Length: 236
Image 1 (cartoon, one colour):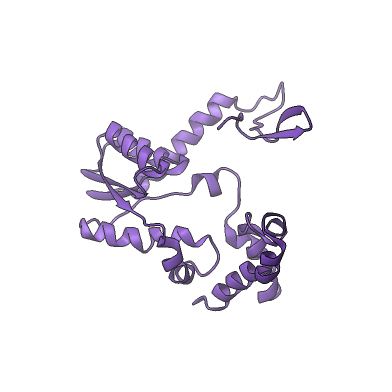
Image 2 (cartoon, helix red, strand yellow):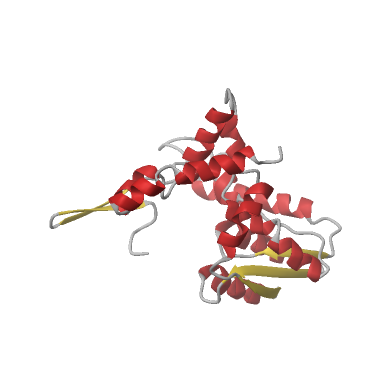
């Protein structure tokens, strides 16, 4: 929160330096293509058309709402279109987390119905295996709550249509998980690629630094073996 967007702070002895490692680059000076504002308008238009296409003839709609880029963008478009009779937003987490805090604020500002499902500290631990099965081991298992937990909530409210999105992951830069599996010669290559792409925190290299040496030696390789087991047991 203290740093500018997309920047890295380096502290070396008594010196502090901050550098920006990434920014949008729309065109070079003198390029005759669209300017930045025109790109933004065109992007907004395409998202609006995509949302409109998916809510055609729908009267009751569920909207998972965390306050993140994708869900709040969809919320804004739904409000602008104003063609669905009943929209209910759902936030998940504990009462103080940002997903719940901002999800409620956004829903209130737009006039959407809203409910919060509390997620206990043991939630991931107790559901991780079934979540990995649902997502076939190819994405972070916590996303499976949209398949499992939220589905039960929507059905309770007699809502059978849900709109969700992954703008940040897919539309705005990174590629879908399955692209990394193209030309994977065998299961071992595939699982290595999945592991390297998704375990971006607490991989073996980081754990070797963070953990006490004796503890690290006992847990070394455990993360990879856990992911591999989920992959081997996936239904597809």
